[in-house]
Amino acid sequence: MRVGFEPEEVDPTISTREARLKWVILVDEALPAGRAVNAAVCAASATAVGVRGLLGPDAKDASGQLHPGLPWAGCSILAASAERIAEIRAKAVESLGVFVADTPVQAQATRVYDEYLRQVGEETSLDYCAVSIVGPRNRVDKLVKKLPLLS
Image (cartoon, rainbow, N blue to C red):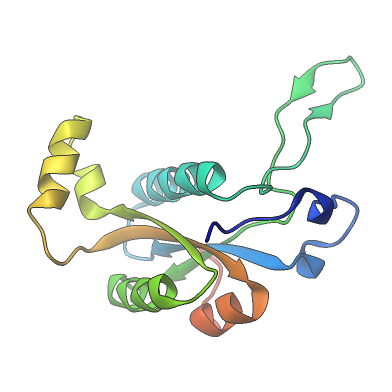
């Protein structure tokens, strides 16, 4: 089952809190700012491709220049410990109708993608810099409970 919005659900006129699906990205609160942003962007990139209907229509400014569509239903970036992120990811993966994309620590250990693939392939248990979750609002809320926004 692929997670996403049906075309008729995409409604950029409503509040993000009214959307059926909720998108959060959990980031390891111990990471320095640059690595935290990198991890979140990498997880978001995989999510934007993997979840249909997530991006809204392009915007056109007054001069006629186009700006690619952004997530119309919003996205919250939350802070958590590495341990908590791993716990939530494990639960999210098992939750029906939930999409999960992650940035394992190996992604920031090399600049060569094949090396990243090799490193991940050698591990049976991964640690994560960031995890992106999209799913039914009530399920996602239950998973992330009262995690704070990343500051």
